[in-house]
Image 1 (tube, one colour):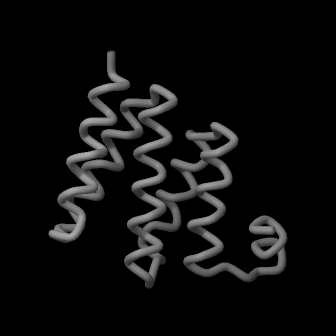
Image 2 (spheres, rainbow, N blue to C red):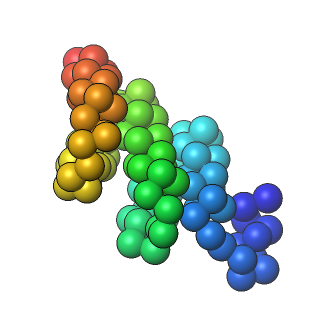
Image 3 (cartoon, rainbow, N blue to C red):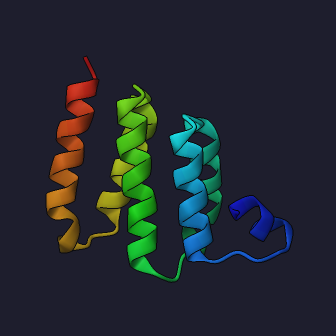
Length: 100
């Protein structure tokens, strides 16, 4: 669905977030990383942006792509949103758990 929307030149925050999630579910972490890096500054909705980044971190960590997980964790931290503090802590724990 996301690919069809993008082919028809329709893209928004929800489509972008879901596309990242779809790539991650297929274990295409590198492709998701490149896509999100390209689109991160276009997000208007913070919650979709944060969700896409948190999904990236979690799946990258679970698939042992620790460098990618750490890269996006730093980006999440740089958003400087106190609402993310608990999520950041959990993601740091997940990265540490999978970095062994």
